[in-house]
Image (cartoon, rainbow, N blue to C red; front, side, top):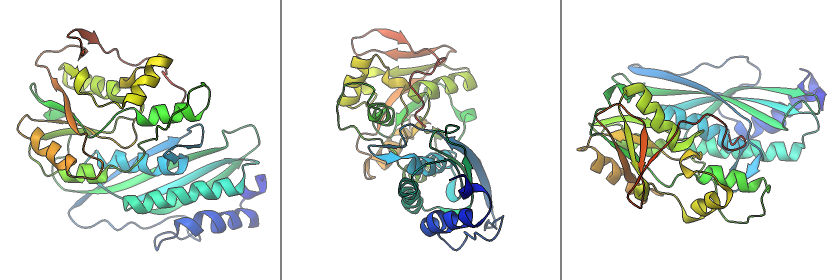
Length: 329
């Protein structure tokens, strides 16, 4: 009800019975409007913020709750930081079922526990019926990193290799099929998960240049970000890019390109040729990392993003302009 957002008794009951109940931790105090953060000496805080409007709210492999937590955690992780704290704001549409809200908040709590982060503050707003998509979540994350240079595009050089921690496009297709807009069945699940184990394992390796999680716009957008920031070309190899057969089949039937599909539990990295084998070995030693592989290289001359096709040709991978899919995050 709208009364659940009016600042009175019903709002307090909602916060205490749903949010505080599932997200409870020593740092979460519903009686204060701010929370102190413990920043250890010698550590640099990193901060990120994101908003989540996925439809449907629940999909195979996750929901908007786990997506909000993991999406924010992963933005910190690929920056080389160890995620520590989250804030969570919920914009709830009038009439949204309380049982479904509790299920999603419980999922967010499980995701936070798995990622090793604590939700330390939050907010709730209720908007009139018809003025929202059921539920929107907004998160801010704080992570810590030891002082020193962080992974970034400035260190990328010609001859460096492009690496992927696992199969790409699972999340985009899982959400698309969950909408049931097409008469296509399947068992594809979102890869929604924290990538902290993957990033922490490779940050100490000399020669790691850059990390990114390929969410909106997928691998193609990450490649174009690299090309634009460095002035170097990016060349990908179709036969090496890990895409599940089921994902590729759906793309073929529906006319989508797997290189633009979002992933929510994968890392794209750039590393020197000497560091790449160590990074791949570290990833493959982790649960779920068996399909980590090198998928391309950085060219010495400025140029577009090019895909070496499996039949021996070349294809330009254009920069994304229009939304290739309905909103998936």
